[in-house]
Length: 199
Image 1 (cartoon, rainbow, N blue to C red):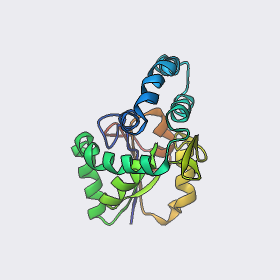
Image 2 (cartoon, one colour; image 1 turned 90 degrees about the vertical axis):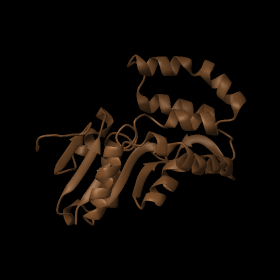
Image 3 (cartoon, rainbow, N blue to C red; image 1 turned 135 degrees about the vertical axis):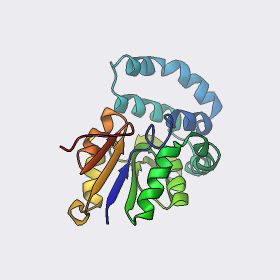
Image 4 (spheres, rainbow, N blue to C red; image 1 turned 180 degrees about the vertical axis):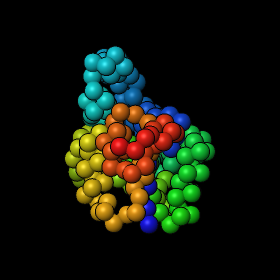
């Protein structure tokens, strides 16, 4: 049996999905204020002056602090069924089906949020390792629960969850520099749809 590790945004999908989810799940008045107050963070990220990790943390804190957990979960379930099917890459879904037909273990490893990834992965019979938000007394705190699942954290979580030596081959699929530590775990590595040379 083999292990197949897939990044989500940009690898399985045609675009980043967190922005779309925020538009659905963040209360409208807060969303309007956030567009103004968080503009420097977004601009800094686009210019390479602010890391993606820091920008996401600021956006999540402003957008979700104090918001009801159940409301965001409901938005996530709806998002998984209503929006995600329209942004899936057919070639990525075909590759996932190929792995499943081989009997491989297929895992989505993503910095995106479990609110919508968990129901989507459940519907497709896929395992999931991803970012999660902290909550207390039924409300989100606006902080991540543990580290964001990006970069080296992706590789760390995979190694913690799976004994890589138990698999004949490990495949990994990604599309950004944040996925490179995940790809480094694999015997066969695919970056933006193309297989990289063996390490």
